[in-house]
Length: 324
Image (cartoon, rainbow, N blue to C red; front, side):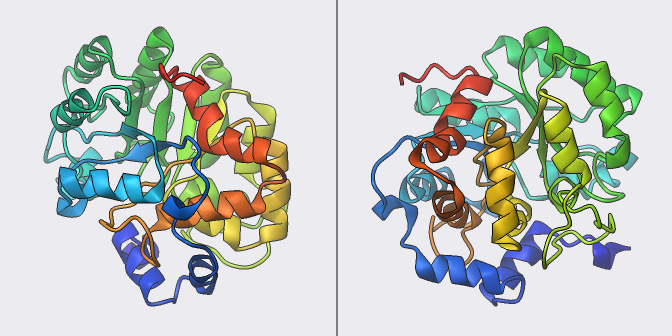
């Protein structure tokens, strides 16, 4: 089973070697780094401190080179040895991501440009109180919720209720039999919590744009068969949003660019740019964040849609105090 659960680190390494994707290499070679593009505001809704040991200075450099003007930092939860963290394997969001204190420190040292979310392992005693504590301190979201629990479990529903009470988005990492399991059951949550803004992310979220998704392959290739669960959730539920970050989001756009153009046209109001990129450079074949910016610019029908995906949707959803 583990060989089917491709890690982000594995994906990035494969990208650098041009195996996952011929398409990734084509995008990178055809477009200059984002920093050389015309200046425009860009909000990155998905970044981490300490990502695979990356320093704060390297993170700041990475975001600047990509052309990102505002960043939301998503913390990990409390390290714990429990089934929900795969007996500790998933501590640090399985990526060495820093706790909320590191996110708060960076956000407060860069006011107006860096923001932070709140997070905790949902089945820990006091998890809701912990998440609420940081919401009261100014967290603009909850997440990244990346734990081994069914997406409709009572623990997750308690977090959804809190998100609704504070009117903040919640980012969910969907991965087959590993994180937020049971994606096919998530529709019931969208119905039960209509005022909660859910932000879908990761392999199973993006693989399910395809009606023929086998639910196991994290980074599928080839033409997309319309009618997948993710497409339907976005069409039918105004509280479903799409985090475009990481190799999973990028792969979803470049595997079938004709489909991607139509997908963007349908869902441009609820697609949001994120990078979730751990490299220190901010450009090149291992920087999925800069490649996604390039793909958005190429596949969007007009400058207005580009601005929506890169800035306006995030500014509105996260209620960020950023002047227009």
